[in-house]
Amino acid sequence: MTAIATGLDRDALAALVARDVPAGSVVNLGIGLPTKVSNHLDPATGVMLHTENGMLGMGPEAHGDEVDPDLINAGKVPVTELPGASYFHHADSFAMMRGGHLDICVLGAYQVSATGDLANWHTGRPEDIPAVGGAMDLALGAKQTFVMMSLFSRDGAAKIVPSCTYPLTGVACVSRVYTDLGVFLIDEEGVVVRELFGLDFAQVCDLVEVPLIDGTHH
Amino acid sequence: MAQVFQTPAEAVAGIADGATVMIGGFGSAGQPVELIEALIEGGASELTVVNNNAGNGDRGLAALIREGRVRRIVCSFPRQSDSWCFDEKYRAGEIELELVAQGNLAERIRAAGAGIGAFFTPTGYGTPLAEGKEVREIDGRHYVLEYPIRADFALVSADVADELGNLVYRKTARNFGPIMAAAATTTVVQVRRIVAVGGLDPEHIVTPCLYVNRVVRVEARTPALAGERQ
Image 1 (spheres, rainbow over the protein chains, first blue to last red):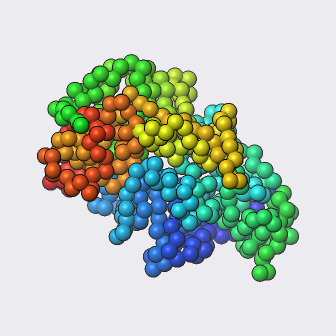
Image 2: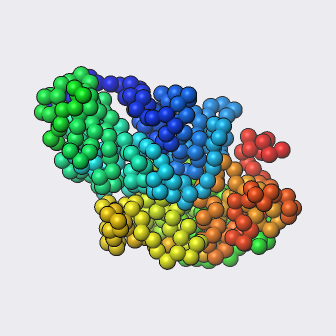
Image 3: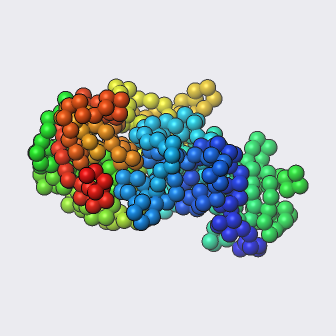
């Protein structure tokens, strides 16, 4: 089974997530695709970026003379600081997350379950070296955890699943899933399809094994 | 209160085979490379190392692993594109890995320095990293019991020390420095600059000197940093 529609590209998806981040939020963007969201945040909204290696008020990626080996993000990429930035040690940084002080974190995923379980840290294959980093803390700590991913894996399997087959990162922690083909909200009622890109509700119901609620007309 | 040493070799003297050594740094930022090189030079082996990662490239922690000095590593993120030294030892079954979620790693280190016997954390509940651990439901939320991580030595990199060992760090190179300094029996710190007592604003000191045992000044090798400090 392959995706039957061409949905949003990665930048358009990042722009969509950025549009949904309320002004003044404190946000942590995970490594990989979520990092792209920062390119689409309007500085006028006053969104502050947290990076778990110990900084609030992170600026854009550093280039040329701006590169400073002492100033990197969680992906170990050199970044810049914005006016109002602060630095703190690792235990404080993770206390900020675990303590519920971050509004939103955006993470990539291998799979998300119908009840918001997240799998994004390990394939479970014995030949792969397991590495978790801050994913488990982030998934649980922020007030809202958004996932950004393609709806289908390269081999065509839907990544929104009845229950995760990959090792879990967190239980019932994802509230929203942004994919190339649609946006899915996970709440007590179930999985609500907020909007779709390039396919209709009946088509997505055929492709995803999870019961879906049509919220596209709201 | 700290003693100031002239060379990294003197500063790391006394680290025995089988010791547990915390090494600061997140990737390369804040990694005390010269202290690690002195540790390699000193010959200690069968070490347990606590670090966020498992070495980058060929220097510092990566070299310590490549030289076969590390029996066991406690870290959160050993899989990196430039982490070939660890990969080789791990695949050959020559190094033991205890994988810890990053925030739990930081809090376990903090707990050791703060005299906490154990703590319940929500991080990791329901995942493979919580298997076999005590869990408890508190006010409707699930938590996992985690224990402190202590060390015989901590090797830390800071920006400036005064002669008592009070420390300030620079930007995201702070990372694990303050909590590791508190969690080890002997804390060894390399700094770019040492100033006289009173030369640091007490309001700006991040690690008070009672956590620091040994200090050594190491020239910043990175031209950009050396330039900025002058």
